[in-house]
Image (cartoon, rainbow, N blue to C red):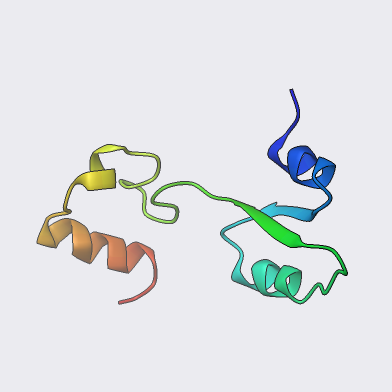
Length: 79
């Protein structure tokens, strides 16, 4: 099977696959100015950076409690 990147490239696109949780890497990648159509495949994980949210489908549609919001903010360095 072809990867997503290979499928884009086979269609004539420039396709860059990156670690999607790195804002500096994303910004640098978006500075690329190819002459062909361009796409970025940013690999990410749901809830990245918060211990109890990472890859937990319960929070895909669920609402965290006020205590969990506080914990998440602490883990993300927002408090």
